[in-house]
Length: 110
Image (cartoon, rainbow, N blue to C red):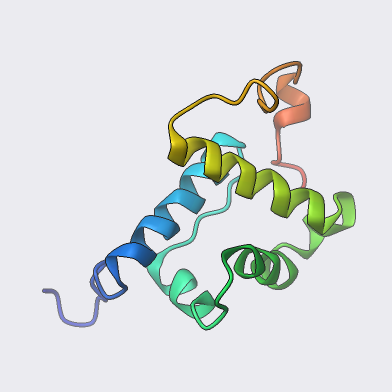
């Protein structure tokens, strides 16, 4: 282990899976957000994953909240995360279906 650099394994395996699942959902939705271990660790005192995301958005992404309702973003990310974890494409929800690249881009708001 390198001195001065925290190991990626300093959170539980279950928490690491959750962190990676959030990051995968962020990528799927073309958000530039990324939860490194330190960021995720700071959110761990919040027990509920949806509430963790809500707090993150309020603290770190207030400009996004000026454009989109927080409940919409939380539901979008969590549904995407759930779909990716299940490994199935939901016919009722697909962020790609009917979206143009400009509509899907978050560069101006992220």
